[in-house]
Image 1 (cartoon, rainbow, N blue to C red):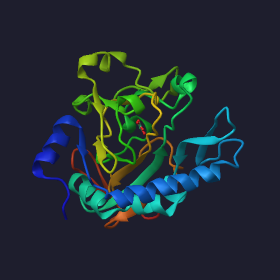
Image 2: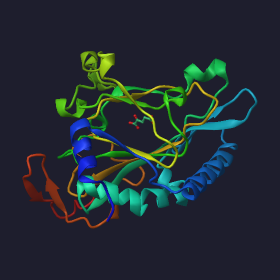
Image 3: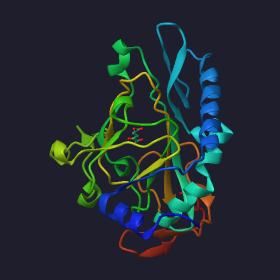
Image 4: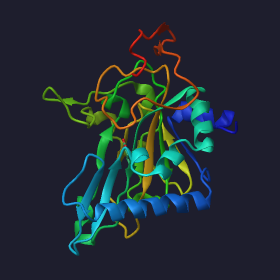
Length: 275
Ligand SMILES: O=C(O)CCC(=O)C(=O)O
């Protein structure tokens, strides 16, 4: 197993974010770009969102795609990327040998006419953990970049070290808002860092990392395949469980155990082996 070096693991533990360049070969990136082209062709027949594909109609009538949810089931090449040995070796360095796919999506951010760019896909400051709390924090997000990514085409912003400050409140007026409701946690712009990665590289972030992502203001796409992996003994305790491919084993095995963040374990009751 190649995986991460001790220094990279330490960096991830300290910062909660790590980039690794050149994980996918150029031809693997090209294969995924072709898969994107096929998904975009499928979107041409759509007049509304499907559960998987969120199209956007340009003034020309052409459809572009904002997001492909459950991307591993929309095109076999995304399933191949999710189970890519080099990617899984890296995830194994972080969560151990028994690994599941929690959910995945292709966050596309296509180039838009300049007057529409500000309305492009974006997301406010949040922690992934708030959307689907689990019994432990072995729940990293891995973004595989199909295009060179920087601030101009809507890269992610993170606050290194914020994962060590614990879960934040995302509830507003009694409902889950999807955005961190503690603005002081992300007000200090001197702590913000952009996650700029060349095509073929990946970024990893901890499930408690505070992060956000702006719209694409460029004329270049920013296709990013985001996979939330988890250790097989990390059991979801709240939030949506209907994500396509939720709990799908991608390496090792499901030993039907629950592990808590303090290291305590207990068997998962019979009949609840999918969690
Ligand atoms: O695609 C991005 O830039 C951000 C993704 C993100 O924040 C998320 O999926 O939670």
